[in-house]
Length: 244
Image (tube, rainbow, N blue to C red):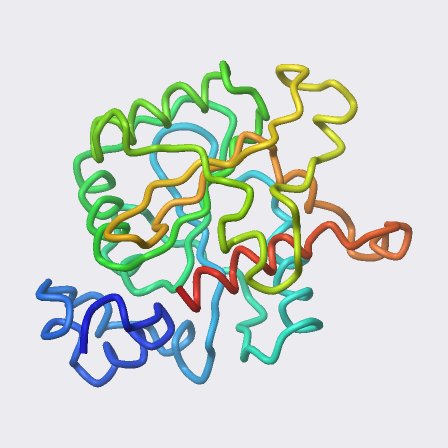
């Protein structure tokens, strides 16, 4: 069995049986040490990464809205709680999906950098969202510099509009715009692309300057006023993370 033949969800199940090390050739002991609250009986749990620099705790209502949509639209067994884990904590290596966002400068510590690289290179999936929705903003420049130093200067690339993430569940013709872009906030641009880092043909990092986190950060009772459910693309991201 090859590494590419294993989905992330399958990898996590195998990890529980102690087979991940043999399949990936990497000593991911942390994957075998999942907490019972996060792993027990669930196909998916939302993990927010807490990092020492910047403001990691943004868009506080977004996880609940995305979790609700996953429950509404899919057959996944979804943990109803958000899990906040330090990026420097080896427990983050066991998550099927991680979210990292902020407005301010990002400067990883050695432990944060080590876990981030290990997670992405060995089968993890991180969705990173720039809350400034600004390609020249402090978060964007500092985070992109971090990625260049870890994975190489040309690792972060624009995704084509026919990338599987846009059709993994719902069908999109590229990344949907956000109201912040349409209202001319941030850099006054509508970004018609997302970026990513691909490892061995697998997208391990999805990076957005579109501020989806704020777009999905609303009181759940206001969802009924939306013409289209804007969290559907979030469902796509999670489903891609679990099945590719």
